[in-house]
Length: 421
Ligand SMILES: C[S@@+](CC[C@H](N)C(=O)[O-])C[C@H]1O[C@@H](n2cnc3c(N)ncnc32)[C@H](O)[C@@H]1O
Ligand code: SF4
Image (cartoon, rainbow, N blue to C red):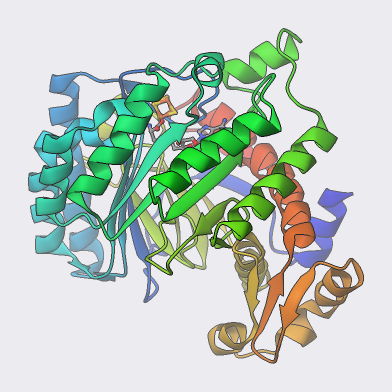
């Protein structure tokens, strides 16, 4: 059914297939693009985590840094000194490369113009006053900490390597150093987790005045360890109705405490800068497994750290690419608007020189009939909690389906010939 809708919404030329990448003539960059850098090092291996990471090793981190510098220079040779509207370091655990960070940033500022936020994500056990102060001096203004839970039993269930005291201490330290905005990630729908556990997690964050809280349900990617365990039916995660109850509870509780939604998972207070590494219209990704999108093609770098380091000596480390028609570009735009739960009709007109009602009349009507709208005027449509919950279900299906296909092939082959979605 969803495949049918996908085919109706896209163009005949969209084959939803990534092909081995062997030419660079359409790697252009759109104005307003964001820059993402993947740091694939961790000290823990969390069983649920789908991201590309390897155990931290000092020498490998140095080699990886040198490869990143080469990749930056390759792009500079290709399209000159380009502007980026933000810079996000994701992972893995980017603070594990704190000693290499100054050289990476220097290189980036030399070859690119970076305006806007400089952000990074990390885990609570990797931060202390010294690391945070260094980050601040380096110009980082947004930080995201993967707390996941303040409950020892939940932390243990998802295989985290610290306890709640470390998580609480991290909040105190990040507050004392002071960043423009701090996001924390929490995970819900963990085995045996209750609404009371979730209330407690949110309350600890609120009492520390954390201005952005992101609550992800525990995704079980079939290729992650927890996905495999679930297939073996060894763990029992909350069912759909329980997850729905949790999602509605999180929305209500955070609204009552002065937060408002910035996407299906995130809530912000005090209108500070929003930490979001995924909601750029266009972006360039550097580092192993990074994705890039310029409105015409989607492409990924090789997922293998060793191949990434080797390949940048002679070429861009891009492994697979998929062409995107104008129609599909509009669909992607709508997908991300639904993700941030605000459809900006005015910006659609500016971007595509077309009326959104003409292009997406059926979907807009459906959203209305389904009772998903909280507010609408001539410029925007804002979704309510019901709408946001449904979008998360659809997003969940697509994200798991697509991520699973691309990741499972790319994790087994550094240079795949073809991935059909
Ligand atoms: C990839 S981690 C990077 C930050 C850091 N390494 C950490 O673990 O805290 C970013 C976030 O992804 C989220 N995440 C990763 N795998 C997930 C999954 N299977 N389900 C839900 N959230 C997940 C976690 O909330 C985590 O904080
Ligand atoms: S969740 Fe974070 S610390 Fe755990 S394996 Fe993934 S990237 Fe590493």
